[in-house]
Length: 470
Image 1 (cartoon, one colour):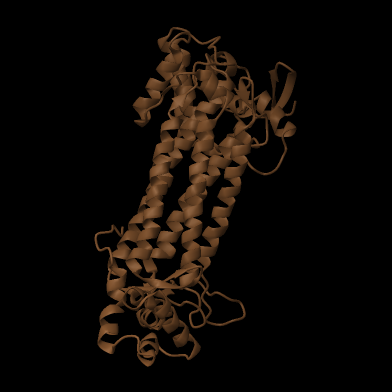
Image 2 (cartoon, helix red, strand yellow):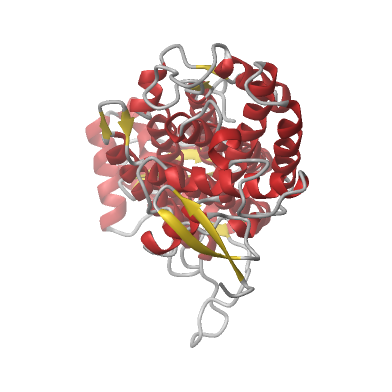
C-alpha cells in the first residue's frame, strides 16, 4: 500500500481508504457503488445522527453495556462532529440504500476512527472503538435514520423556517398598517369588482401565511415520537430495556423539544406519515407564497400599460436590451422555488407509499426533499421580506383613478334603483365612454345628490368595519 492509503476491512474484505479521511471501508465502498447524481446527504441529517450517537453512547454507559472510557471518547468525537470539524467527511450520495445504511455507517466510522485516535489508537484499526460494536451499540439504521429525519426536520422547521415566515408576516402586517385608508378597486376573474382597502388586500396575504404557520406548528407534533430502541424491525432486539427512553431524555435536555419514544415503533419505522404530513403542509405554504407573489406581480404590472398599483423596489436592471426596465424578479424567483417545493412534496407523498412490511425504503429521498423544501421556503420568506415587501410602495394617484373609473361601483346603486336598472347604467357608461355618475344622471335613474351619497368607495370598502383585517 502507498503511504497515502491505509487498508481497512469490513465483512466483504479489505478496502483501500485514503489516509486523510476518517471514514472507513463501508463508506469507501459506497462512494463507488452509489455514484448517482450530485446530491449529497444533507448535513442536517449528519448532525442529527451525531446527536443520536452521542445520546446513545451516554445511554449505553448508563445501562452498563458500554464502558465509561469508550463512552467519553465517543462523546468527544461526537462533539467535534457537531461543531462542524468533519463536515467534509460525509461524501455519500442521497441515492443509496433506501434505509440510509451507508450514511449511518459513514457516521459510525468517522466517529469511531476519531474516538480511537482520542483513545491512543490509529484510524482504520477499529481499536479501541469499533464503529458497529461501540458507536452503533443498541441501534440499527432502521430506527436511527428515521429518528434523525425527525430531528433534522423538526429543528429546521422550528429554528429556521418558522422564524423566517413570522418575519415575513410581520413585514406584511406592518405595510398593511400604513395603508388602512387607501381604498382601491377589487378584482375577481381579473375583472373590476367592488372596492376594498390596500390593507384588506395585504391583510388577506398575511392571514393566509398565518394559517400556514399554524399548520406547520401542528405538524411538529407528529415528528416528536421517535422509534429509537426498536433496532431492526421494531422489537428492540439487541437494545437493553429503557435504551430508547434514555436517548430521548438526553435529546429533550439538549434541545428542549418533546422527543419521546413512539407508542408503536413498528408504525414509525414501517411508514413515515409524519414527514408526508409535514411536506403536505409545506406544500400548502408554497401554494400560499405562489399565490401572493402572483398577486403582487399583477398589481405591479406596467408601470404604464398594466395595473400599476404597486411599485416594487428596483433591485437590479430588468433587461439587457430595454434600458430602465424593472422586472418583478423576486416574485419570479419565489414562484419557481415554490413550484419546486410542490414537486418535492409530490415525491415525498409517493415515497411515503414505499413502506414494505417493517420498513419504508425511501428514507434518504424523504430526508433530502423535506430538508431542501424547508430551506427553499425559509429563503423565499427571507428574500421576499428583505428585497420586496419592506421596499414596497403604492402609486396613490393611479389607484384613485382606477377606483373612481370602475363601473363596478354601480353595485352600490342596485339596492337603490334595482339590479336591472343598475346593470343598464353600467352598460350605458361603458358603451358611451361615460363615467358611472354621468351615465346615471343621463338616464335619470337617480339624482346627483343621492348618487354621491350612495356611491362612496370608502364606505363600500368599510361595510363591515368590525372585520379583522390583519
